[in-house]
Image (cartoon, rainbow, N blue to C red):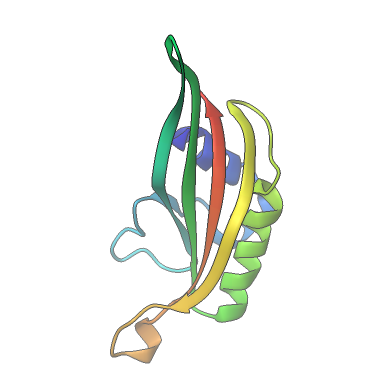
Length: 127
């Protein structure tokens, strides 16, 4: 799921026009310039039948859109939302937006505090 989700975003010009290939799982690498995207698996469960797992995984993925300006973080989040919300294809039987929130990272130096828009997506993946 992780590889296909990242590849899906990297194949979306509206996203890569803003971040290039700076889409990473877990965090933004130290020293990487903004804008960028950090992906996080928040939870994941498998569906089961009386004979065991049926191969369908359901989960929540948090997509953090970081940028130096609020406007750029918001534009990036809109491009990702447009691509992922309602997506079906490959191993995904459905990706759906579950929530969004805006924030700003902490720190003492104003210039080092990027803006962040976080999007939560519910994913349905057939392994």
